[in-house]
Amino acid sequence: MNHENYTSSISYDKRLYKQDILGSIAHVKMLSKQNIISSKESEQIINGLNQIKSEIETETFSWNENLEDIHMNIENRLFEIIGKTAGKLHTGRSRNDQVSTDMRLFVKEETINVVKAITKLQKSILKLSEKHLEIELPGYTHLQRAQPILFSHHMLAYFEMFSRDTERFLQTRNRADVCTLGSGALAGTTYDIDREFVAKKLGFSKISSNSMDAVSDRDFIIDFCSSAATCMVHISRLSEELIIWTSKEFNFLKLNKKHTTGSSMMPQKQNPDYAELSRGRSARTIGNLMSILTLLKGLPLSYNRDLQEDKERLFDSLDTLLSTLSVIDEMLNKMKLNTKSIQKAVEDPELLATDIADYLGKKGVPFREAYKIVVEIVNYSNENNITLREFSLKDYQNFSNLFNEDVLEISANSSIQSRNIPGGTSTQQVSDSIKKSKIILEETIEKLT
Ligand code: ARG
Image 1 (cartoon, helix red, strand yellow):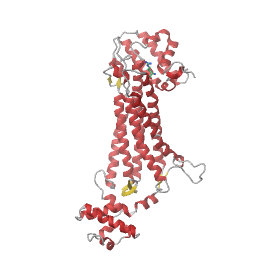
Image 2 (spheres, rainbow, N blue to C red; image 1 turned 60 degrees about the vertical axis):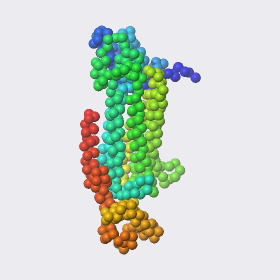
Image 3 (cartoon, protein in one colour; image 1 turned 90 degrees about the vertical axis):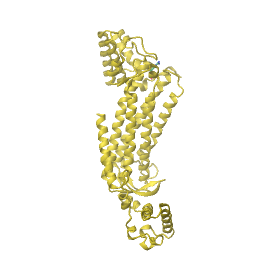
Image 4 (cartoon, rainbow, N blue to C red; image 1 turned 45 degrees about the vertical axis):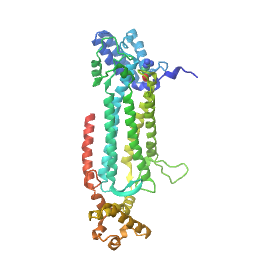
């Protein structure tokens, strides 16, 4: 076995070429401003770097697998293009502060792309909630039918989760928004550099305060992987609902054919593969989070080569999240609700048991007692095979003489509409919630541009 490539990261860190070149250009401009190199040398280096950038983008750059990483590949090519002046690029800099800066620039850019993808999904959730505002659905606890709710109320719960995800990614971006260039290998540099100038050129809002922390800090990668894992966990919960709702047992919705696959053996099957994989892929992002935490645990200061392992964790979490956000968005947009079976399910009168107890409660019966009366009513209904819908006023009155005609008016709709408190499921509250959510979303999108 050839061990030469054991330390190599070029196969994946070539993805940082743009950030690496940007960082180098800012560094070189600063070196020339500080008279550490001449403006002619700086110009030569910058032209060379720009040429390399276009070679990479036009795929004419020849990657050298024997030069272990992106930094070495670019620097080596710079020597080929401009000769020994290329050696001045690395003045007052180390690959340790260089790679940290590259990663920070990358995370800053990608968190915005992630937030854009989340807001796109949230837009679809709002569209769906608006379109199906009339649809009533059984709400579940313990996966047992509990109380009627609006379908839109259910969907808006996911809107909330994704709003928190956006917050987390924007916080992640803030943590990455620190320029570490100028920290050298670990102790800073003897050259009279201008760190603020470099930070400004690269769009960082501040510079790091401790060179040792700067070259070894990967907390922003933990934050990214953690935010990604949390967001994927949310997606996996939504996927799970799509999966159970498409089962015959529920039959609440049909996914677009595009998102299902037949079985190789059972001709009747339409499996929700896309939803299953978007649920399953959350596992990778959780794994990546565990990896990055484990990587940093017990690592002494300052830079250690272990840190090279941060990249694949970050890239994989990012790629998994972006592709899954896009898939789940398309699934939501293309699925069709089975209003008939939903209607049938929500007509299950047992969903109204709490409302009947509340009915007695409002007539002065202590809730615990009202609860017991309704348990008896439900037991009676089950034992005698009479649904609550078939109950007459007389049947009710056998359990309490406080029942009047109006108990027969309790329905899924009355149950939903009576929960008219902020955060509740009434149509009024849910439409208000849609309106507010739209404003919040527009504000977020505006901040991104
Ligand atoms: N490829 C390395 C990384 O990703 C770059 C820094 C290498 N530094 C060093 N002292 N060998 O961490």
